[in-house]
Image (tube, rainbow, N blue to C red; front, side, top):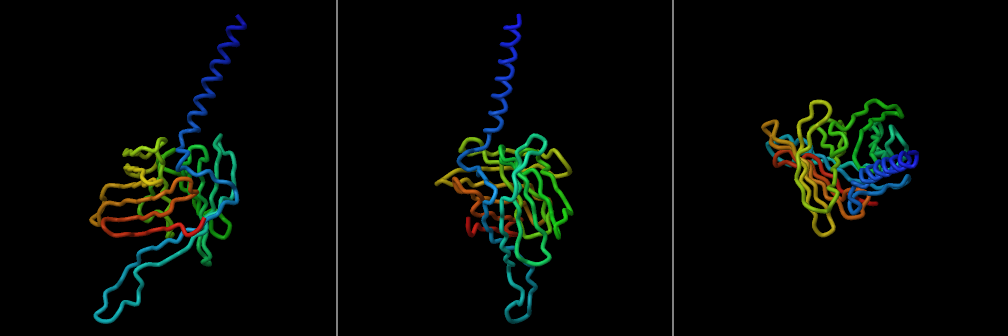
Length: 232
């Protein structure tokens, strides 16, 4: 009888272990990054600015404002059973906040975004879509920074699906993913909620890279914010 009980325990433990491994290995190994503390890269963001019409002569207001943010993998920790990677995002402008992007390392999903000013945490926003892609609300973060982050399909095959929020009042998001020439292209989109049109973020990610190569936020036909990886 004891042998039977022992065998059952082994079977249960084995099944649980297999389920855990399967869950951990859901990330796409071709396009999901493996970050190491100390990794660093920079992204140049261009934010569209309002241009005021003039009766004559060139406008003194530029069409866009550029900001370079430095990303650094700052820490790795275990939180509530998750392996968490924290990426610190900052620029060299005085008075600007620093952002901490907290990821589940195994599933490669963005868990939360923390705003830090003068070394003090002032706001933490959790992913309203749980363990899935995150598309922020328009103007949710007062910074020229794209925090939208996809959940790349486990297999490198085209996919389109609707993601429902688990927290807050965020509306559903559609994620469309295609693969070609060693690159994944992900478009996160929301239906039009205002006269300016639909809201979408397009992200290009190269195979084996630690961050996306380019991203672009559009509202209707207008590019609101774009980012380009400038070094890695």
